[in-house]
Length: 153
Image (cartoon, rainbow, N blue to C red; front, side, top):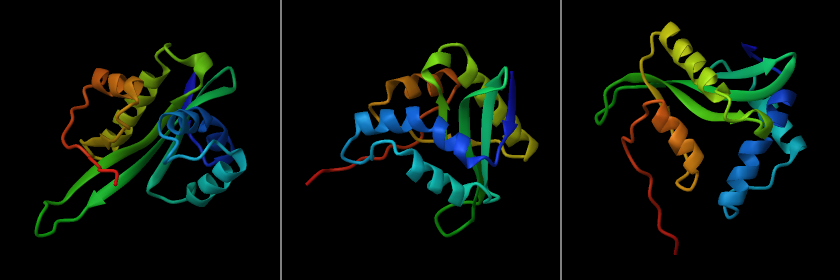
C-alpha cells in the first residue's frame, strides 16, 4: 500500500464518484449527479494550483481512494488573528475498500503533511446528514467549533 501526491486529474475525477453520489443523494437540491467529464474538467482546473494537494491511496497498483486538501493562510484583520490551517475538502474511499482503515491512513498522512508545513490546525466541514463522515471525524478527534445554519424561504 502506498500514498502519494498526484497531478492526475482523471484519477481524482473517477475517485470522486462516491462523494458526489452521496452528496447528490443526501442533498439533491444542492448537488448535481456525478458526471465524469464535468468532474475531470473541474479537477483539471485545480490540479496545478500550489495551495491544493491531491493524495492517492493504492494497493497492488489499484487506486481506491483520495484526499483533496488545501493549505490556507488566514490574514490578521480587525476581527481575527492570523493563522494557518490545512483544510480537508474531501476524503473518498471506494465502497469495496471501506471499513478497512484506509481513511484513517489518509488522515494520518494529512496530519503529517500539516506538521511538515509547521501547521497545527486541520479544518473541514461536513454536511449534517452525512453521519458516516461525522463519526469518522469524531473518531479522529475533530471537535465542532462553529455551525453553519440556513433558513429556506
